[in-house]
Length: 221
Image (cartoon, rainbow, N blue to C red):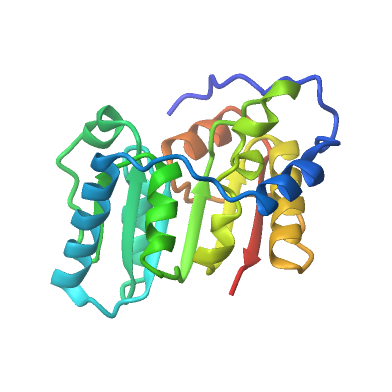
């Protein structure tokens, strides 16, 4: 894949000054937006696929899985786990299909804002939780659109597990690390990251374009 991805430009030169206060408000006031029926159906389908394979298998969520590369890779890396890849775009999920989806994985279309809350509502805990190359929303006024600034973010603590987030924008990962530190009560750091085996098309393209990659990891229990 040729490297032609633009670098992210933002007026921010560091983590947003309002992040801690915004997360505090979200923690104090649970998100109550009604859940759409199609997202309930997506969870039902995903859990049925898991039950057909092994209802007791530890669960991994690949949040924002795009075309599903990462979901298949995670399923191969953790053969004893069941992996749910979720993306809101049916076009992305259908692109280049059919993929050879293994028995310990499923790809579903859903809005993550609802899907995360539905999982938590079922009392489901995750073994691992991947958030790979989310939309960075780089404008200063976009903080609440980034996952760590969104009102749904506190539900990540209910889902638990080992969380990993990657981005080609250092500030996004620094903010995510700060938010996960506040959420889990333990320090989380941002780190530079490199790989010879990219997990997503975005990761492959960013590497080919000479971007520095960043990630943070946290254990939310």
